[in-house]
Image (cartoon, rainbow, N blue to C red):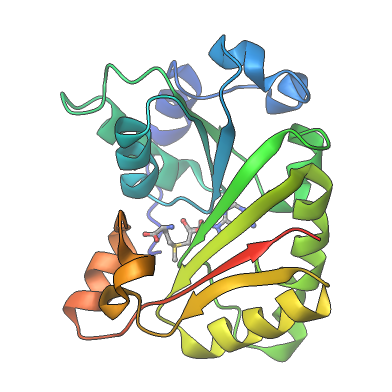
Length: 216
Ligand code: SAM
């Protein structure tokens, strides 16, 4: 994700009604944020928000929280929310934070599902722990997910994907399904919502990998 310094980003993001200002205060209370008892799905590293906004529009009975580290990127998501297509949505919120601290924001068994889409690859071996599908991150997810909760991960980066398959096994999670060519896998591609990166890379001809892992 190319980052530009956008001076208005911080102010606009902080003032927006969908952005949770002190997310730690909502730990254990996300149902109150949404005012219902619907399941809670989160996307980590959501970028400009195309996936989560379309998911929220398609599944009004699910609550969605999108997590993004940079305000300059989150700004694009809140601007997209403000368009006619999404501005009436009641079931989506955004949080600006580093996902390393996800346990400060969500309590045990508070999250039903986690989406990771086109996560940063961190190609150097010494940075492997920063990958959002590393065993370190899976341990964090394990502590916030419900018992049968799962992680869905898509990427065009096959090295990162193979690493992730191994990490899932090493963490003791169950691999529910996986494919190296999502768009030609009828079952796994059913109801697929494309992310910005997915559109960009599949247009270039890159096959998309997807795995679904279930918490141990
Ligand atoms: N998910 C989007 C998509 O598929 O189009 C964006 C993919 S982009 C390559 C990865 C995004 O994840 C970036 O916006 C980056 O800032 C965010 N990100 C990476 N590591 C993160 C972390 N530890 N916590 C929160 N966001 C993170």
